[in-house]
Image (cartoon, rainbow, N blue to C red; front, side, top):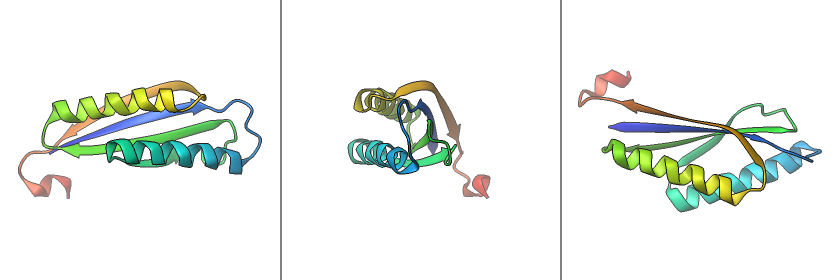
Length: 103
C-alpha cells in the first residue's frame, strides 16, 4: 500500500477575516475532493488570516498512480484559485503486506 501526502501552503492576499479564509479553504477542498477522490484538510495556521495550509492525501497499491494523482491535484489547486501558492511538498509512504507496520 502506498500513501501520498501533498502539502499546499498558500498566501492569502486581501483576506480580512477567518470567514473569508474559510470560504476559500472550503471551495478548494471541495474541488479537490470531487475531482480526485482525495482526503483534504487544513493542517496549519488555522488562526492566520493571510495563510492557508492544506494537506491532500491519497492511497493506492501503485506508487505511480499516487504520484500522478498528487501532481494533478497540485496543478488543479494552482488553477482553481487566484491565491498565491508559496510552497508545496510531496511525501510518499510505503507499507509492506504486513498490516502490523502501521500499528
